[in-house]
Length: 112
Image (cartoon, rainbow, N blue to C red; front, side, top):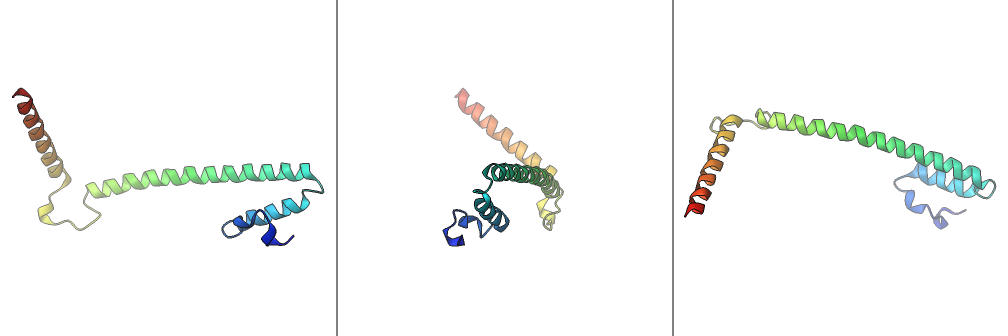
C-alpha cells in the first residue's frame, strides 16, 4: 500500500517506528485480525508503561532541580553577589518589617 494513502502518515515524522508498526498491522490485519489486535494492544500497553515510567523519573528530577535551584538562590550561588546586596536573612527580615508596617497601617485605618 502506498504510504501517502495510509491513515498513519501523520505518525511518520515524529514516530517512525510506530508508523511502520501501524502499517504492518494494517497489512496483516486481514490475514489474522485477532492476533494483530492483541499484539497491538500489548504493544501499546507496554509503550504506555514506558512513558509512565519516564514521566515519573522526570517528575522526580524536576522536583529535585527546583529544590536545588532554590537552595543555590538562597545561598547566593546563582549569580555573583555584590556586597551591598546583603544575604537572604537580611532580606527576609526586611520583608517581615514591611509586612508588620503594612499590618499596623491597616489596623490603624480600621480603627478610624
